[in-house]
Image 1: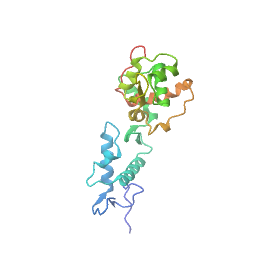
Image 2: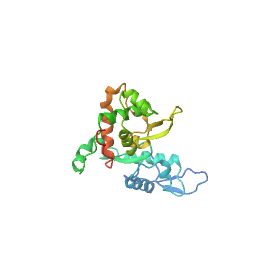
Image 3: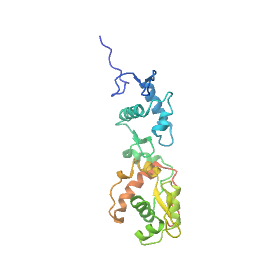
Image 4: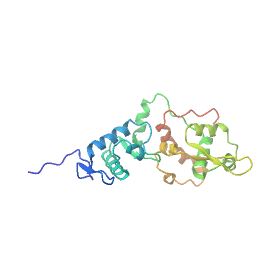
Length: 225
């Protein structure tokens, strides 16, 4: 009589032990244990963990290919649950499914900050036209941009100065950060919806609202922003 399959064995990796991919490596890796280690690390992490971070959990190094396969198995095993494993710009993170956020908001002591149209328009210009200077933003919006707005977005960790334009005064060039993508649950800017004009600003609001929920420690918008 053949033994029944182990229900805890992840689909897609047939053996309970598989060879580590490093050349000449004689040791084997216990798949179930490796999955538990990855799961524990990701569930306890405050920030997304990159593949490089996760490889540091194991000695000897399992290699990028095997770590990738294990992460795919772990991601599949969490499908259909209230929490999902998602790959973001800076790494992997467990996060609550977006559809459940309205329920969790009832337990939140303080409401997530709501940003003004001026903040959202400034953010949208940086997102879709980056890198841009403050003068570029003012030219597109047709009004002056408050220094408080730039500071707010920088404090939030959504934009950063990536250089200076080689023009008189050498104005700072602003672009979005990996944290911006992480908070929006995206891997790259190519996943953003198209924005034909600032009249589509509500689409940016739809993106920012989940990000506000994902970062409860976000700074409050300054007065008049």
